[in-house]
Length: 174
Image 1 (cartoon, rainbow, N blue to C red):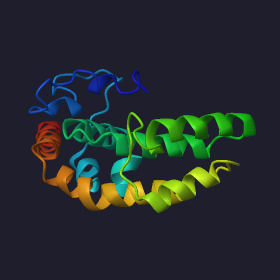
Image 2: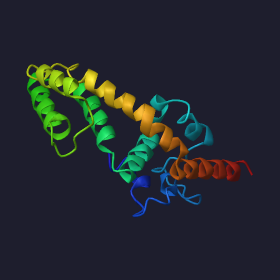
Image 3: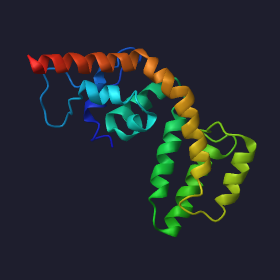
Image 4: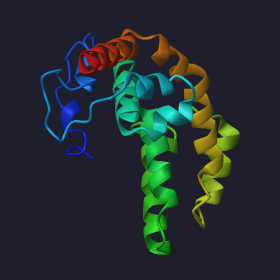
């Protein structure tokens, strides 16, 4: 993933300048995708659009890191990977890893879920299936959609990305 997001690798220490999510106007390398204003604006139309776009997802992850709440998106992404696993052995291993990292009380990156959901998930992971994490993933998705996503859209970071995409679009049409 790191190589796919080469344009995004230069992170600002202060998170005040998020323009690195768009390549410099003079850069024309094939590795870096030039985002159109339409693409960036589409991120504001639905949370699904944002998560489906690799640069939208990267921008949202960086925003959550700046708010010290990136465990939510990291958990959601781990669940997306988990659903794709075909091997039952690997499914058990990944389920245990996700539980220990995100769900267990006092885990390193504990997500904010209620006791009932935590216990229900723990029980379902005793014999994991590809859908064992669906309920808890849905709760975290909903939390991000209702709380973090609107803040992202109002953030200076997102506004800078929109403005930069708009400026690039104007330069291309001249």
